[in-house]
Amino acid sequence: APRGGYSIKNSKEFIRRYESYLKPTLKIAQLLLSAGNLVIPQLENVPIANNNTVPLETNTPEYRQDMEQRLKFVDILVNQIDGKQTSRRDCAVTDDGHVRWVCPKHYDEVNSIDKRSSYINDFKGMGGKFDQKSREADVIGMNVTERNIRMICGALTKGFNIVKLVFQDCSFYEDYLETLLDTIINRSSILCLSMVTVAVTNFFGGIKYTCKNMVVEFKNQSLKVRFNDSYHNGNIPILNQLLLRNKIHRTLNISACDFLGHESDLQRCFESNRTVTELIVEYSNNIDILNAIFNSKTNALHQLKLPQSLSIPSILSPFCELLKKNTTFVEVDLMDYTGFKEEAFIIKLLDILREHKSIRYLSLHVEDIQLSNQKETYMIRSLRRDKFIARLCISASIVSREFIEALYHASKVNDTLTYMNFYNSQVNDEDKAQLHSLYETGNLLQLGFYEQSRWDVRFAKLNEQQSRGKSNKILNFILIDENNLQGKQQIFIDDSDPKFV
Image (cartoon, rainbow, N blue to C red; front, side, top):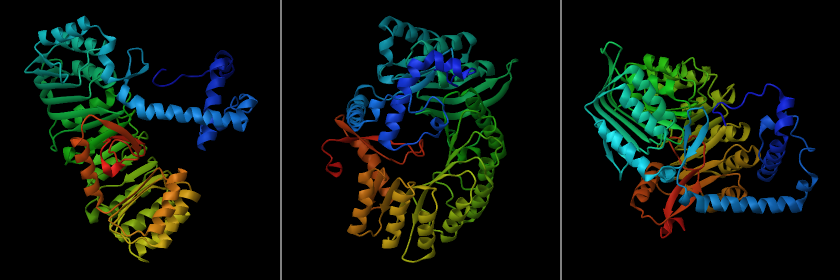
């Protein structure tokens, strides 16, 4: 389908022409909705989505039971087989503007050996280096010409499988760089782009700016951009080009350390964005970076995640004031490896979100909840009355019976809390069992009780993933992922690992 969707100018004509496709699609959608107790608001006002569209036999208990069994079978295939067979898929946009999904593991199968050899030889012929095992391509010490750009872009769009592309001590005419970035971002298999001391020139050959040290990772429709934790004059221009050329990636992941002292320039860069809807900013610990985030005039940003941020107490109150005035963010993630201890901040945050016009989802990590203190009182009140706490971590706390009842209410009655983890906290067995019943019924998608801190648990999981062999299973659960605010993730676990039995 076209990346931006189809424009339906005549709805009656559209329905008449595509009725044979719309009916089964709506039937499947309604069955999935009824089976999973889900709601798609967009369908409620669609005239064709009525009971007359779906045959009566689909409303019988026997048909529903049969369909549920089929869906379970599909789920097993996807989770246990497909993940091993087809690896990960990346989104790419073709020259005519259509979206396709690419499996890097099998990317080469669409091309003959002769074609792949031709791409490699052409790349080496222009002075580049290519490692066929790692799929890394290096261009070092070159003035990259228009002919070079045509060759690289042509090969990438026709199936040349490069995983990492490196430019070092090179120069580009700015128009050629724009063409290259458009192809890399939207129509290639490249997962990582590295630029070290790359000069960008104007039409007359003068240097406009230099990209000193940049690494861009493309993963799951996310752009993770790093400039080695230091500012250079090329950081803003190259980031601006990435945002302008991007057509498919919805998440931008940056570090505030790369823009210290130039936050106002970063704000203008945000305002050039039209595609990114989710913003992740690491180390947001000064008021200038927060102003750049919240005062941006763009209406495209709807999700905000601030990892390893807000660690200075003096910045918490200004953050709350900026959050209060914002009218575009729908989801805010403040769930970090360490939790918030400041009682006044927790109270003020909950009060602001209770009256907020746009924010509907909050992910939060709270530490040091004690029996009947103000922090517990306000958390209990919010869990019972409000419907914005979606994901919650509790650390180093004594969890009372009243708090457990509030958590149960937020998940079971309010149907908002879907993620719950306890770290180094006191929770009795009866309360654990009550929360586990929510996990069994599907109200909680993730529930965990850990004796260690969240940092220790996460660090141990990373070490385990690195040390495992090739014999893996896929385990689905909600995992803290800096590239995803709310989605279900997959990790690979070894069959013999006793901790996951």
